Length: 423
Ligand code: HAM
Image 1 (cartoon, protein in one colour):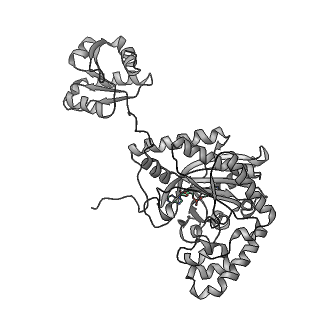
Image 2 (cartoon, helix red, strand yellow):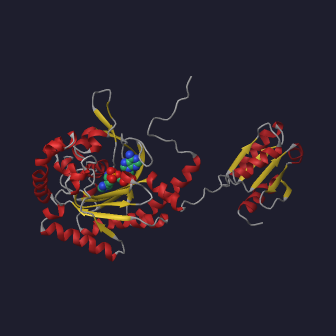
Image 3 (tube, rainbow, N blue to C red):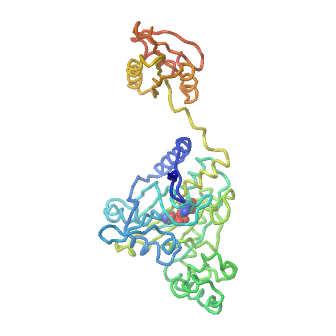
């Protein structure tokens, strides 16, 4: 029978990679909690409508990339392609915004998009994100960007290129839509099928097209459709970013791939990644989303970052710390006859919180001791016939290569001393 492999576009995370992910996830939590963000977890599967209404029916994410299925009751469900709509639903559904405003939450977990898999693009990937819900100000947009910036600093990742733009408010976008339709209508015959449809349903999405990129280059700029208030808002964000010591590039073509944004949008690019996968993460303000989901209006802003892509960059830059030892002590029997005694000793040592691996396999002692080195143990405790008879154990310091026989009553203290480097 053929071996069963992991589904296309998914990967196993094996123990060595776990250490790097843990490093990243721990740092993210530390940084966001230093800004007052609290953890939240939402289901990985949601009603399809959450995304078709929230993210937008004409976006690539909803149109082409969702894993959607029917449950046994015929309801349409989708593996979440992103976390903002779910986080907003959870926060507003629980009325958290009536206790404190704004509500600051953070999350980490798996997300799913049916994109063509390649380096930095998978069907299942991991995001960390934050959402700040219930208020609106340039300072809050800057806070979101600064949190991500401090996180990249904590990871030791330099060379981030922050791209910033404004999508304005609904009135601005209506003006821009008119300008786009005026530009694209005479070109309709030369557009790809998707774009021809989007010209009539959602013209802003014409700017996402890779096939008609030549036309995008000469399309009208959003900035020209923004009113004074929207321009002032973006200017205030740029000014506050400068005060925070964060370099931003205004990118007139940045529109993001999701429909829920208004005003500030941003992405974090890095040159180590190429082409469409150059973005380590992004986000922006989404003041209209709450109402699209059927809730009272709630202004909000946030970001999400791709964990796998960030790890690719961190590895490239050499900032990922090497995985530490997985254990402190190896307890082994010389022969199978001492297996039970060795297991009892291991149990005793573990009780003090010391990481202890038991090896009572029927193989030679030198092999067991070599394996102890490979898993990073500092101490080997050896139980043979003599030790069982004398109620003692041989304790070997694997760093110092010294060895002593200690009575059972002193064993835990002796091991503890060596593990903590107090010999
Ligand atoms: P997004 O730009 O769609 O934003 O995704 C954020 C990041 O997730 C991307 O920059 C990328 O690093 C990672 N990512 C996306 N798709 C894939 C994939 N197929 N494989 C690997 N990594 C991927 C959002 O999801 C918004 N919810 C961000 C946000 C939060 N806006 C406001 N609040």
